[in-house]
Length: 125
Image (cartoon, rainbow, N blue to C red; front, side, top):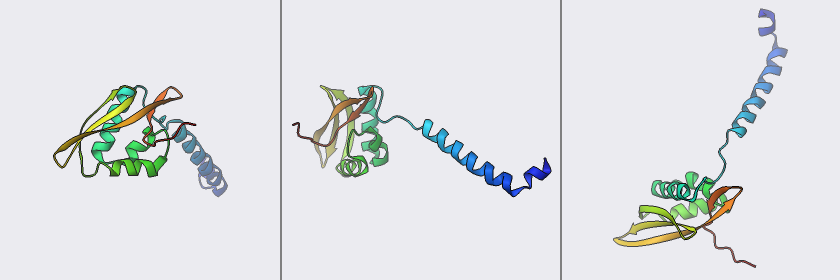
């Protein structure tokens, strides 16, 4: 046993195999994008905008990725997010900016049984 543990060939085989196993486990445990219900999606989007964290918002988006998440969160840097809720097929985020109240609507889409928001206006053809 001691000879095997001191053998360089053994370690050159074990480390890559261990690394690949770790990568497969991490990919399998990766959370699915979106949320299981529109109400949970509204809570997650609200929390991401309240925290000004585009990394939390990015997996909740249907399209756009990091650039759209960063831009969307950037719109709320000077605003206080009051609350968010799911209403009429959209996540409605209510906010206060410079003493005035407003709301921001994000249409909700369903992809593979998970709900995501689409902050990008895409013309339908």
